[in-house]
Image (cartoon, rainbow, N blue to C red; front, side, top):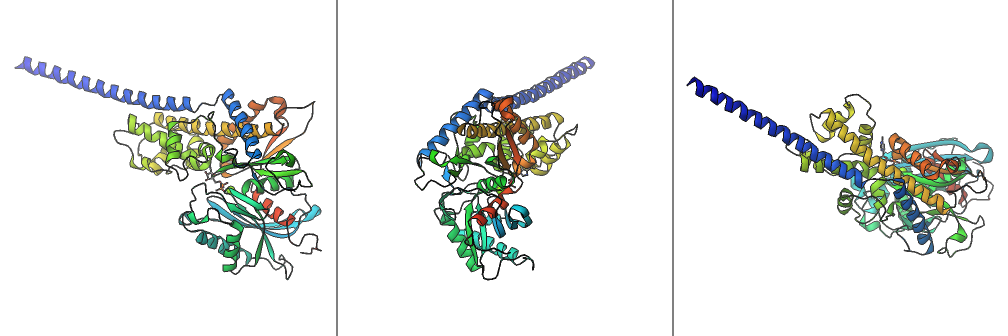
Amino acid sequence: MGKVAVGATVICVAAAAALLARHRMNCSGRWAKAMAILKDFEEKCGTPIGKLRQVADAMTVEMHAGLASEGGSKLKMLISYVDNLPTGDEKGLFYALDLGGTNFRVIRVLLGGQEGHVVKQEFEEGSIPPHLMTGSSNDLFDYIAEALAKFIATEDEGIHVSPGRQRELGFTFSFPVRQTSISSGNLIKWTKGFSIDDAVGQDIVGELTKAMDRAGLDMRVAALVNDTIGTLAGGRYSNKDVIAAVILGTGTNAAYVEQAHAIPKWHGLLPKSGEMVINMEWGNFRSSHLPLTEYDQALDAESLNPGEQIFEKVISGMYLGEIVRRVLCQMAEEADFFGDTVPPKLKIPFILRTPDMSAMHHDTSSDLRVVGNKLKDILEIPDTSLKMRKVVVKLCDIVATRGACLSAAGIVGILKKLGRDTVKDGEKQKSVIALDGGLYEHYTKFSACMESTLKEMLGKEVSENIIIELSNDGSGIGAALLAASHSQYLGMDESF
Ligand code: ADP
Ligand code: MG
């Protein structure tokens, strides 16, 4: 009996040990599987310098193609009708309205000419209610016009337009628009999560003007631009060497100053300045050299605009967090990364926003507390080990690095097009690129990586002449400046 009992105990212990070993093996097997998914993703996202050069070259080639003919490239290279960037002479009270993503702003600027520059500036900010992003264009424009009317009602006694004069507005509308003049254009398509069927093809200024009428506002839209053009104009006002502007926010885009004679599809008169600002709409760039993964393909296929804005979907703020979520979800599904079940919240598209990803990526605490809290608060994953948190940080790093490197390659593409990617005969011509957008401004690791990649691609000597300048809301002032330089009262005696 005693013997049997001993024997049974031995068998029990052996069985338990085997179970434990299997469990350990399962755990390490799962871990290995999760790491394999991570590694595979990292490899596919790779941006070695050779690849970045190919991307930059492809950008330059597409720029040429888009300038040559309508529809010649994925890059629309839209003519902005801005052929005179601000000089500093602009004078008077002007408004700007910025609509282009998560937020919108109304701005009032008092311009004082060469001596005064920006005498006074006021703004108010609001967010677009999500239901208006997919509703009707009337509702969206009414909402904006009403916000504008409220803002105008706060005009000071001292600062107002001269009696009998219409107020003038620079409208920053950051979606692809085919311009027909400086102050008119038709919407080509929505991007960045907006989807309003009845607005595609619409005369944007006409719609806003009707909404302003409905809101009882007598106001003239003097300039229709987008955030890149606004940023370029605002940047040029404060620095004469600004030649391009790049937005890295919810979406991404770039604009630059082109020689008008180098635009084959421009059939208008050559402007006096000889220059024309081109709105690249670079978010729609795509190339076989882009390091895309199955996660990017799935994100695109399930997006509101499949097949479009591929560059934007790899580098901009709307999508970076979502890419991280998709990889984490795969790791949870295929390798039980978060345990036996997949955390339900992890399956919700866009639940992990880029600002949260950025907060995790920048976590410097020894136990990665911020990462742990974000996973708990957003994805409702209560317990995560330090090891797991490190993997999440690594994932953020892979996604942000790829986006930042590709943004740098895009900028090199523009510099190449302008012949500014080399130093000619010891020339010390500075090229300043005005950067704006929440992603660039707040995601420090992203912007640092972009700038160091740019230096690496250009080399030391050229880099000394290329300056990236944060143009914090230069876009609003830029639009107001363009409204001023296209004012119907231009040349008349102005007293404000
Ligand atoms: P928009 O592009 O909508 O005009 P912004 O330029 O302010 O507005 O950019 C907002 C976007 O910037 C957000 O959608 C987000 O993707 C990104 N962003 C904002 N804050 C951060 C942050 N702290 N870290 C990373 N990205 C951020
Ligand atoms: Mg913006």
